[in-house]
Image (cartoon, rainbow, N blue to C red; front, side, top):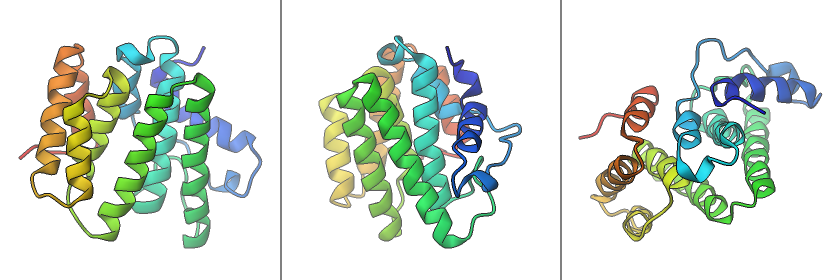
Length: 193
């Protein structure tokens, strides 16, 4: 069984073993920690297979970072290959989640991917709150306030990121994940306002 703390190393090993066009660009994740994956793995909704949940969340996160930031596992690919690699990682993460039969989390990650793209295309703030809200919902379950905050974010309501963060904190606290949420926020450089 996969250990959640090794999610990034497992991702690198799997991408190398795929022997795909991405494989030559797989780097060792070094000291990077799978903080978002660890948050999800500690949640009650991931209790059946915490390692797989950590791996699939970190796979999605790596896809996002390949597209928009500084990736931890895929490095040095040109712009076109990076775009394909990011999409490939999104698909792999969702495929892993489908294998677990967690339809609620598939919907959550699909919202995360599409809202992330929207925020980047519109050069808007809220990415950190969106990610933390999504992984908390996967870990502890989504509630109506979280869904309303995502809808508000999609409509470009200025208070939506704060609402996502507030709901993530509330849900994490109720599930006993407050410390994990704090570590995840720090790991992605999110500072609540």
